[in-house]
Amino acid sequence: MENIILTGDRPTGRLHLGHYVGSLKRRVELQNKNDYKELIILIADAQALTDNSGNPQKVRDNVIEVMLDYLAVGLDPKKVTFCIQSQIRALPELTAYYMNLVTLPRVLRNPTVKSEIKLRGFNNNEESGVPVGFVNYPISQAADITAFKANLIPVGDDQEPMIEQTREVVRSFNRIYNTDVLVECKSVLPENEICSRLPGTDGGAKMSKSIGNCIYLADDEATIKKKVNSMASFPRALEEPGIVEGNVIFTYLRAFANDSHFEKYYPEFKNLDELESAYKKGGLGDGRIKKFLNDVLQEELKPIREKRIEFSKNIPYILEVLKEGSEKANMLADKTLEEVKSAMGINYFVNDEYINEQIEKHSN
Ligand code: TRP
Image 1 (spheres, helix red, strand yellow):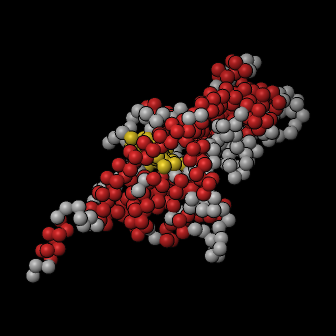
Image 2 (cartoon, rainbow, N blue to C red):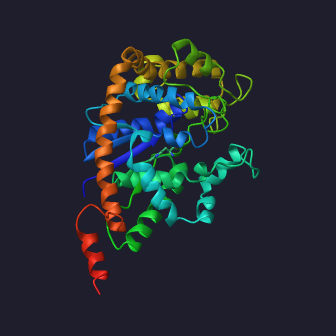
Image 3 (cartoon, rainbow, N blue to C red):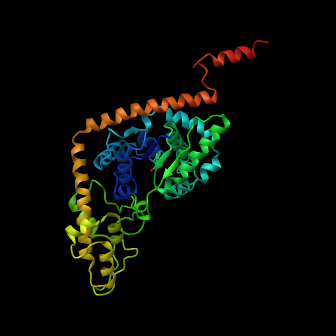
C-alpha cells in the first residue's frame, strides 16, 4: 500500500526545540525519503479554538508563525501539502457523523484529554467547565486522519490515545456500514526518550510554552545564549565529580552535539562519551560546557533563523502555499466524504439508487 502520511500542529505559539527534535526533523527526513503518495501537514486552527475560544487572534496570528517555522526547517511545499483545518469543508461534517459512534464515557476516558482538562483547570461548573468541543477533539482528529485516508501519523507519544480512538472510529464505521471506506492508521513515534521529551531549559518538565522554558526556532543569537547560560545545573565545587544523569546541559548535548561539533568547538574531546567521562571525574566547570552547548545550538539554529527571516519578508507567498494546499486537501477530503455518505446511505440525490429503492417499497 502506498503511504499517506498526515500530521499536524495546533497554531497556538511558535515552534521550539522540543518540536524540532520531537517531530520537525523527522518530518524533513520523511519528506526526503519520498516513500509516500501524500505527505500532508495540517495546521489545526479549529482544534486550537477548542480551548482558545476567548483568544481567536492568537490562533489567527500563529497560523503564519507555525508555517514560517515549517518552511524554515526545510519542509518543502513542492513535496508537502500544507493546509488549514478550518478551510477543509468535509472535516466538521465527518466529525458530526463520527460523534454518534463514540460514547461520552469513552471520550472522557481518553488519558490525554483527561490530563489536558486538569492542566487547563477546567472544572464542572457552567462558567469554567470543559467546552464540549474540547472533549470532542479526538473525534475531530479522527476526521482529520480519515478524511485523507492517512495510514501513518507521525506524532508525539501524548497523541497515541488519539490514534487509538481513530482506529476505533474506523472499525465501528466499517463494521456498521459494512464497508472498507475508512483506513486504519498507526502512529509513528519519536525514536527515543530525548526526542519525545526534550526537557525545558529549567531541566524539569518537557519544553512547553505554558511553562516558559523554551528555546524557540525564531530566537536570536543573544536570546539563545542567555537561555543556555540560565540553564539549571547542579552546584558543586569544581574539583568534585560532575553529575551527567538528569543534567539538562548533557541531555541537550545528547540531542544536538555530534563529533564534528567537538572538532570545531571543543577539540580537547573527540565525542560526547569522552566529555562525559571527564566531567564525571571532576575538574570540569559548567561554564565551559554551556559555552560548547551554546556553540552547537547556534550552529544548528542560525540557518533556520535566517531562512525564517527571509520567508517572513514574503507573506503573500506563505498564504499562496496554504491556499493551494487547502484546495488540494479539499479535493481529497470531499472525495472521502462522498464515499462516507454513500456508505451511510445518505446520498439521496447522487444517483437513482434511492429513488428506485423507494419506488419499489411503495409500489404495493
Ligand atoms: N492534536 C495534535 C497536537 O496537539 C494536532 C493535530 C490535529 C493532529 N489534527 C491532527 C496531529 C491529525 C496528527 C494528525 O499536536
